[in-house]
Amino acid sequence: MKKLYITAISTLLILGVSAQKTLDRSKQPIPGPAPVISITDPVQYTLPNGIIVLVVENHKLPKVSATYSIDAGPVTEGSKAGVLDIMGQMLSEGTTNRTKAAFDEATDQMGADISLSSSGGNVSALTRYFNKAFLLMVEALRKPAFPQESFDKIKSLTITGIKANDKNANAISSRVVNALVYGTDHPNGEFTSETTVNGLTLQDVKNAYTSYITPSRGYLTFVGDITPEQAKALAVKAFGDWKGVALSLPKLKEVANPSKTEIDVTDVPSAVQSELTVTNLISLPLSNPDYFAVLLANQILGGSADARLFMNLREKHGYTYGAYSRTGYGRFQTTFSASASVRNEKADSAVIEFLNEIQSIRNIKVSEEELKNAKALYNGTFALSLEDPARTAAFASNVLINNLPKDFYKTYLQKINAVTTDDVERVAKKYFNYDNTRIIAVGKAEVILPGLKKLGYTVNQYDKFAKPATANTPIAVNISANDIIAKYIAAIGGADELKKVNSYSSTGEMTVQGTKLTLTEKKLAPNLELTEMQMGGQTVVHEVFDGAKGYQTQMGNKKDMTDEELADKKDEKGLFPQLYYNDGTFKLEVAGVEKVGDANAYKIKVTGPSGKASTEYYV
Figure (cartoon, rainbow, N blue to C red):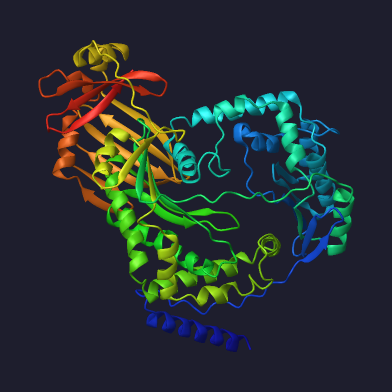
C-alpha cells in the first residue's frame, strides 16, 4: 500500500513536469469567465428615530465592528471653514462622564479601536468586549465634553498644519483645483485657511455638533460575530432615546465648465515639479446607465500603471513617475480628472500628451483586448472585495442612499461585461472633455509659463488661494550680482573655509501623489556626483557623474547622459559653484526681487559656460 502511494505521487509529479514544459510563459494568461457573484442581503431594522440598522452576521472570527454614519451631504461652511473637522477631532477629547485619558485607558484595556469624526464613529473589538466598546463609542458621540484646552490645542495644530503646507505644491494644487473647478462658494470648492480657523470659537464647534451629529439620516452597521437580534437590542439601548435636528440633503447650484479649454497657472517658486491636472465637471449618479462604461473607459485611459496615460507620460517620455485619471460619481456634481507630477521644464509637453490621450479615447475605439483586460480587472477585484463581510453592508447602504435597484450589486458584473467598445467611445466623448476643459498647473511659473503660453490656449494666473494673481510692483535693486554672491559666500562661512570642503552628502524627502520619495545626493570635489531616489525602500533612480561622463538608471533601465546633460554637469565647477562665478566663464544678471515664502529674495540669472541659463534666488 505504501508503494502504491509513492507511485501515485511520482505519476503526479511527472504529469506536472510535462504540463510545465507545454506552458508558454511568453503569453499573457487568458482571463477566465466573470465569477458568479452571490451576495446575501444584510438584516435591516429601522429605529423609531429613523436610524437604519444593517447587520451582517459572520461568525468566522470572534470579532465585531460597528459604524455609525450620518448622510448629511456636502456642507457649506463659509467663513467657518474647518469647524466640522475640528468638531470631529473634539469628539475624541473626552466625554461628560470621563476625561480623554480615562476614555483612552478604557479603550486600551479592551484592545478596542474607536474612531470618531464629524460624520459619525467606528468601533471594533473582540466579541467578549464589543458591547462595552460600542457603548463607549456611543458615549463619545452623544456626550462629548468639548474642553476649552482641547479646542485650543487642536486649533493650534490645525494652523500649524496649514502653515507647513504653505510651500507644498501638491497641497496647494489640491486646494486650487477644487476652488477653480467648483468656485470658493461651493462646499467642494471652499477650503480651510489660517484666517477661517483663527476666527473659530468653541461655541462654533458646539453649534456644528448640534447641527450635524444627529439620528437623522443615520446608518448603523454591525459586521461580525453578532446576531441580528443582539445588534438590534444594542442599537435600541444606545440610540433608541436619541433625538436631534432633522437633516435634509442640500440643493447645490449646477457649476459650468469653461466654454473653451483654458490653462490656469499658480506659481510656487520653490517647486521642483509641476502638479498638472486636466479636469472637467460631470454628473454621474450610480443609477446612470453610463456608469459602468465610464468606469471601464477611465480604467483604460488612466486607471492603473498599465493604462494609456502611465505608459505614455512615464514609460514612453519619462516626464513623471506616474500619470493617472479618475472619475467621480454620486448624487452630486463631481469631476473627471487626469493628473501627474512632472518636471517643470516638461510641463507643456506633458499637457500636450494628456490632451492627445484624451482626444484619442474620445475619437478612436479602444481595442477589444484593452476592453477585455479592463473587464477582467473589475471582475477579479470586485469578487475579491466580497471576502470582506463589511462590503455587504456598504453595498446595502449605497443602495439605500442612492435609491438604487436592490439587485444593483448582484448584477454588477453582468453590467460591466455588457459594455462594448462603442459604449466606451460614446461615454468618453460625453464625460472626458477636450474642447472645454480646465488645465491647472501648479509649479514654478518662471519655468512653465513660456511653454504653456505657446500651446494656443488662454492662460490665467492665480495665487495659491485661487485668486487672480496681480503683478508685483518691481522693487528697485541697488546692488550688483557679484556683490550679492559675495555676501552669500560670506554668510555660509567664507571662501577660505568653503575651499577646505572636499565632499558633502544631503538627504531630503518629498511626496508625489501621496507616495513618499527619499532623495540622497553625494558630491566629491571637484565635480563628481551621485544622486539616488528611493520609493518604499527601493531605488527608483540612480544617477552618476564622474566629471567627464555619466549615466542614469531608472527602474532597471540604464541610459547614458546626453551631450546637453553632460554640458550642464560640467558647468558646475565645484561643490560650491558660487566660488567660480567670477572666473570669467559665467555671466550674472540681477533680474529683480521676488517673494520666496514671506521674504524678498534677489533673483539672479546665471548663464554658464555651456550657454545654458538658470535662475537662483538669494534672501
